[in-house]
Length: 285
Image 1 (tube, rainbow, N blue to C red):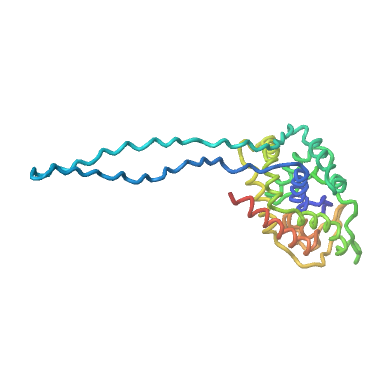
Image 2 (image 1 turned 135 degrees about the horizontal axis):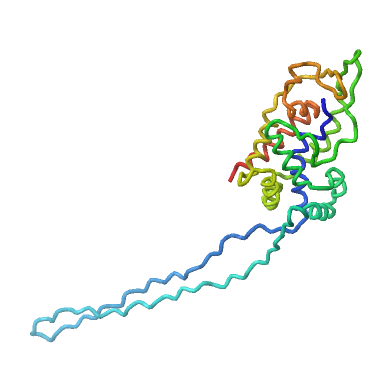
């Protein structure tokens, strides 16, 4: 079984990391639309009608209504609304997005730790490729947007070429999952919308033209949410260089599902709970 780097957790955890970049920046949401107060005219009381009577015994003359003056025109003026100063954040070109990302991460309280998780080059491009693979239940063969875990998977030898995965291995993924769960999903998606042009450009580069990256991101999340689970402990064999599951049915699971088994049941459930919150906001206009 290949030693994949953070795999599914990384797929969406990197979203959280990229969102945090903008949490350190000053950003004001657009103000509401301008409104114009129109002065409402006050109703005017009708003027009294003067009645004129002819002296007797001449028959009374017909009563003529006094002519009313025409109503005055009401001037409608638009009050002067002061402009609200807003900071406009200019996104860099995709080739310079790594420096942009690093600069803002360094301003965060946890920036050093976050930078230690990310690769140093082409983070957005690698993230887009990763999500595209996960959406199809696969994992990229080479580069990931986050660094590989330093700890190797812990196993216990049971017999000749038969091993058992140790639950202590799950702890490698706990900090990443906990970090993602701590991100406010409402703010995270707001920041993602700001960075969307960079993700979309990277998505076009791998041949998807005008297809919306949001759709692929939702499919990737659904892949994780719908992943099948299995009860451990998991036995492994090592026919060549890498471990594979001894149970053929588990080994037939797709790479995403097998990676979730490596993260452990508690991390997998916490990850799914967090991803549901992201999905709800992605699909809601």
